[in-house]
Amino acid sequence: MNMAGFLLFCVFLVLNPSVFAQVTEEIVVKATDAVMFQMTANMKLTQDQLEAIRPIVTDNIVKIRDLQLGLQRGDIDGKTMYNQREQLIEEEDRKLSYILTKDQMKVWINIQDQ
Image (cartoon, rainbow, N blue to C red; front, side, top):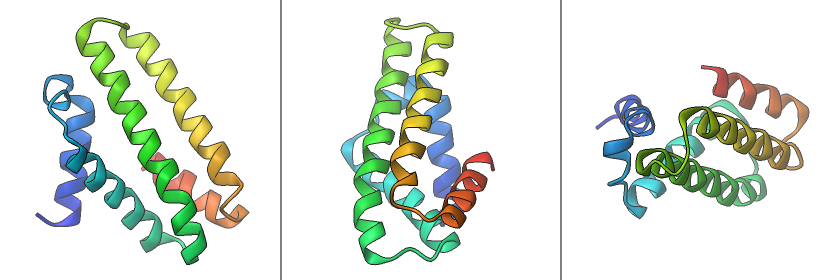
Protein backbone atom coordinates (compact mmCIF):
# COMPACT_ATOMS: atom_id res chain seq x y z
CA MET A 1 0.00 0.00 0.00
CA ASN A 2 1.43 3.39 -0.92
CA MET A 3 1.55 6.31 1.55
CA ALA A 4 -1.53 8.03 0.08
CA GLY A 5 -3.49 4.80 0.39
CA PHE A 6 -2.31 4.34 3.94
CA LEU A 7 -3.34 7.89 4.86
CA LEU A 8 -6.81 7.27 3.40
CA PHE A 9 -6.98 4.05 5.41
CA CYS A 10 -6.11 6.00 8.59
CA VAL A 11 -8.86 8.51 7.85
CA PHE A 12 -11.29 5.63 7.31
CA LEU A 13 -10.36 4.21 10.71
CA VAL A 14 -10.86 7.56 12.42
CA LEU A 15 -14.26 8.05 10.80
CA ASN A 16 -15.50 4.49 11.33
CA PRO A 17 -15.75 3.70 15.06
CA SER A 18 -16.70 0.03 14.60
CA VAL A 19 -13.53 -0.59 12.61
CA PHE A 20 -11.55 1.77 14.83
CA ALA A 21 -12.28 -0.42 17.87
CA GLN A 22 -10.10 -3.11 16.30
CA VAL A 23 -7.07 -0.86 15.93
CA THR A 24 -3.97 -2.46 17.34
CA GLU A 25 -0.76 -0.97 18.62
CA GLU A 26 0.77 -1.75 15.23
CA ILE A 27 -1.75 0.54 13.55
CA VAL A 28 -1.01 3.30 16.07
CA VAL A 29 2.67 3.00 15.15
CA LYS A 30 1.84 3.07 11.42
CA ALA A 31 -0.45 6.08 11.87
CA THR A 32 2.33 7.85 13.78
CA ASP A 33 4.76 6.94 10.99
CA ALA A 34 2.37 8.42 8.41
CA VAL A 35 2.11 11.71 10.30
CA MET A 36 5.87 11.81 10.80
CA PHE A 37 6.35 11.14 7.09
CA GLN A 38 4.09 14.10 6.23
CA MET A 39 5.96 16.34 8.63
CA THR A 40 9.36 15.21 7.37
CA ALA A 41 8.33 15.58 3.73
CA ASN A 42 7.03 19.11 4.24
CA MET A 43 9.37 20.56 6.88
CA LYS A 44 13.09 20.59 7.42
CA LEU A 45 13.09 18.87 10.80
CA THR A 46 16.24 18.22 12.76
CA GLN A 47 16.87 14.84 14.35
CA ASP A 48 16.23 16.42 17.77
CA GLN A 49 12.89 17.75 16.56
CA LEU A 50 11.91 14.34 15.16
CA GLU A 51 12.74 12.64 18.44
CA ALA A 52 10.79 15.24 20.44
CA ILE A 53 7.75 15.25 18.14
CA ARG A 54 7.15 11.51 17.75
CA PRO A 55 5.89 10.85 21.31
CA ILE A 56 3.58 13.87 21.11
CA VAL A 57 2.05 12.63 17.86
CA THR A 58 1.72 9.06 19.17
CA ASP A 59 0.07 10.25 22.37
CA ASN A 60 -2.44 12.31 20.42
CA ILE A 61 -3.29 9.41 18.10
CA VAL A 62 -3.91 7.13 21.10
CA LYS A 63 -6.09 9.75 22.83
CA ILE A 64 -8.17 10.31 19.69
CA ARG A 65 -8.54 6.53 19.32
CA ASP A 66 -9.75 6.36 22.92
CA LEU A 67 -12.31 9.11 22.23
CA GLN A 68 -13.58 7.12 19.25
CA LEU A 69 -13.88 4.03 21.40
CA GLY A 70 -15.76 6.03 24.05
CA LEU A 71 -18.19 7.22 21.40
CA GLN A 72 -18.67 3.70 20.12
CA ARG A 73 -19.33 2.36 23.64
CA GLY A 74 -21.76 5.18 24.30
CA ASP A 75 -19.63 6.69 27.07
CA ILE A 76 -19.67 10.07 25.31
CA ASP A 77 -21.83 11.69 22.65
CA GLY A 78 -20.66 13.00 19.29
CA LYS A 79 -20.56 16.64 20.37
CA THR A 80 -18.45 15.82 23.43
CA MET A 81 -16.13 13.67 21.33
CA TYR A 82 -15.73 16.47 18.78
CA ASN A 83 -15.04 19.09 21.47
CA GLN A 84 -12.51 16.87 23.26
CA ARG A 85 -10.84 16.05 19.96
CA GLU A 86 -10.49 19.76 19.20
CA GLN A 87 -8.95 20.27 22.64
CA LEU A 88 -6.48 17.46 21.98
CA ILE A 89 -5.46 19.04 18.68
CA GLU A 90 -5.00 22.42 20.37
CA GLU A 91 -2.91 20.79 23.11
CA GLU A 92 -0.80 18.98 20.51
CA ASP A 93 -0.28 22.25 18.61
CA ARG A 94 0.75 24.00 21.82
CA LYS A 95 3.33 21.29 22.58
CA LEU A 96 4.64 21.34 19.04
CA SER A 97 4.97 25.13 19.10
CA TYR A 98 7.78 24.72 21.65
CA ILE A 99 9.65 22.39 19.26
CA LEU A 100 8.92 23.75 15.79
CA THR A 101 9.94 27.11 14.39
CA LYS A 102 7.21 29.61 13.51
CA ASP A 103 7.55 28.73 9.82
CA GLN A 104 7.36 25.01 10.59
CA MET A 105 4.23 25.60 12.70
CA LYS A 106 2.60 27.36 9.74
CA VAL A 107 3.35 24.32 7.59
CA TRP A 108 2.00 21.99 10.31
CA ILE A 109 -1.27 23.98 10.54
CA ASN A 110 -1.54 23.83 6.75
CA ILE A 111 -1.04 20.04 6.81
CA GLN A 112 -3.79 19.71 9.43
CA ASP A 113 -6.16 21.81 7.34
CA GLN A 114 -5.75 19.56 4.30
